[in-house]
Structures are given as structure tokens and as C-alpha cells.
Image 1 (tube, one colour):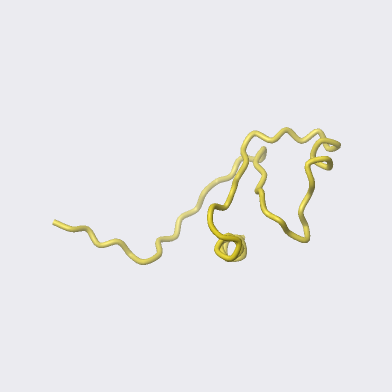
Image 2 (cartoon, rainbow, N blue to C red; image 1 turned 90 degrees about the vertical axis):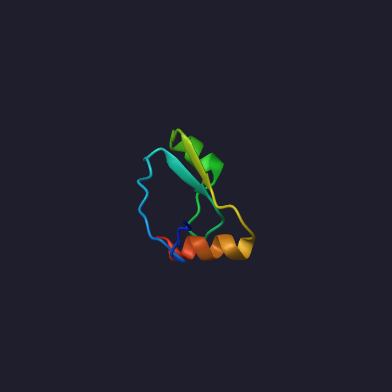
Length: 62
């Protein structure tokens, strides 16, 4: 018996406050700025894929 998966399934992930996204953007904050804010990074989120695909994932998921 085969299971059919929908082409796209939506889900929601809760991201802890100590998380940062590694991705270039106009509103990005550099490592030095994080250090000066005494922000401790506990989770690093990296979008895996080509820049084009990662950009699409970034833009489609607020």
C-alpha cells in the first residue's frame, strides 16, 4: 500500500528566542553587533540549498 503525499504541506515551527538565521539581508545584524548586545546564540538556522532556492524559502516564510 503506497501513501500519497501532498505536493506541499504547511506546518509551523516555534523558534526559540536564542536563535539566529544565517542569511544575508538588508536588515541583517553582524556577529560583532550580536556580541555588543551580549546576545548568546544557542540555535543557528541555515537554509540549505542554492542561493536562489534559499532566497525563495526566506521570502516565502515570514
